Image: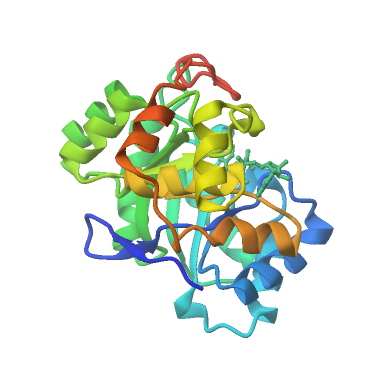
Length: 273
Ligand code: NAD
């Protein structure tokens, strides 16, 4: 099974469902990447700060899948924002992964107090024009941050990767993204399992004969989001990709919409620097 693709606003496309590498130990990353690609995944979500870009590249080279079939994302960490340091950070990521370019480079966090995300965004635009990265986007950007970077150069990020799960549904950002042709990509999509026991999830899981995790991933898919769950087990990877053979009803989607509590599992982008 492979996930369908979503169109990006720069003419490219991204597989809708991939797997993430946060907290995957470097010595297991090559195996996880190889097993993920063998299971049918074609989207890998990495980041310099995850400390496993070398393993990402090793797994990519070991898998029986052509490079151009795989979509590789990585990210510029907060302390590398700014023109010269972003250029260097991107070069270092490419060297660690062992690729001449990646499919998508994101600014990991806006870090408003640092005051450098606009300069960093302009640098990514230049790196894209130079062919070092194919597409460019952001992560953890708020509406106000997006307005700043779009307003400056008119270059709209292809994607914003944000915390999104049943307890934090991000309606305002999703509406802004929809208006501007930005793909919403959900991180920590399973929300640390905190909604697995909710009636709306359990009832849907029982009806379709799937796990609570699969129901939640299917909810992301039906919202139109891209989604990047993490599992280090081959069986978990396979389970999380198996969400295209069933659908949630409108009533089930509405039931999950009511699980919003506004609780984050990670930092607040307004204050994380
Ligand atoms: P996730 O929601 O994917 O959950 C991972 C946890 O759920 C793990 O403990 C895993 O063992 C468990 N799990 C996975 N599949 C399961 C299943 N089918 N049933 C039960 N449990 C299951 O969380 P995550 O790793 O926090 O987020 C996913 C990816 O998002 C990360 O790996 C990373 O690539 C990305 N991310 C990005 C940011 C950012 O700031 N941009 C922040 C956090 C995560």
